[in-house]
Length: 244
Image 1 (cartoon, rainbow, N blue to C red):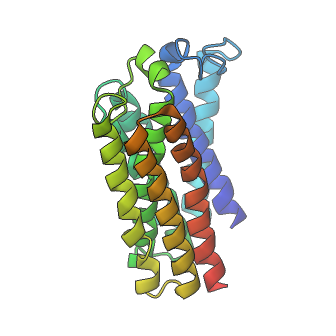
Image 2 (image 1 turned 45 degrees about the vertical axis):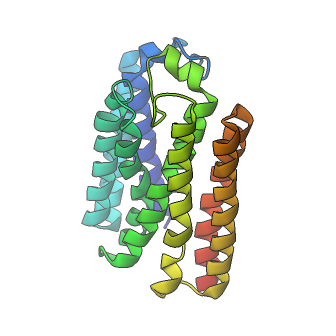
């Protein structure tokens, strides 16, 4: 388990570092990112490349050699798609969020494959929950930091701005988490206790998105953002504790 944690940490770190290398110029523009090591000149490009490549290779080696081949392949797919598909698309189209949702949802599937050695439907259920969760999560962040993202040329909201259309799409994706969250129960992965907890969490999360649709305010987006921070660990911990 600790080797899985270490390998996943290194691959994720490498992916995020590649993102910062690619966006080092736009990071200088945004208030949120201008103090990162590269735009703040605390690290050279050469140093960052050495650390990033070493972390990525070591992480993929650990996942492949000490866990299993499928875990290594999933780690590689996540790294490549995040750094070389999602990252460059951020400045081109709001669909980058859809592309980024795939590597963002891989960790749960990778964990299942690491434990079982196979791609079974249970792993894909976990993947689907995390996949759908990312849309309200990222759009809430993009809404709250809209001006900062726009200054760097990143258009991440689905309808091009902080408007009712973007809020409506956020609400739709948040609502889908309620039925998807019941899949672990109906598939036999977990019991009725976690199903109740997940449903209540889904309803509360959905109501936060409804508040965003009603007000189209930064306060509502901030609440939804923090709601997303709470929702996902609650769901995964509920499934785990129900099995224990």
